[in-house]
Length: 216
Image (cartoon, rainbow, N blue to C red):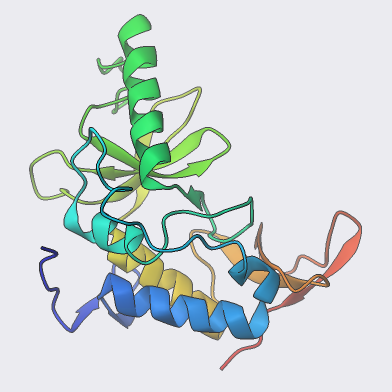
């Protein structure tokens, strides 16, 4: 049973947003259907009970997110930092990193780096070409935060989000208001796709024009 969340919360970026994962995905779905239908079309159906039977315990808000969309059916520039994975892909990426870390002493912190290559309590909810956006389930005040685990580096939480809900809420806020998310800004392509790029003044991608998303 997914635990209920409070009605609203102030995110780390100062925006007051709804914190229900389901409500946030609903807003994201509606925006994509209206403005970027080609990207909306690649969202996978909700995860079933069978899909969620994996050898990895997931945090409640990630389970709720997968109950909205079990990843995607094809590559798309859907989110600014990594592409949401299916439950099966999450389990596969977690095991892959566990195996790699065991081979390269990757569970240990090697100064001056503040984080290891990998930690068993990191849940790789999204994949950016091998650089994983992780939910940090280590106990303590930062439990649940989002960070990145590079395929050839260490964990990085310098620009972390307090939780998955805050991150997705800020993505929705950015789509409606044209603001950035960790330096990534939303655009639309000529093929009715959502495209995130660095900086607020990009004009082309692959020699095709980009336009900034319409602001509310």
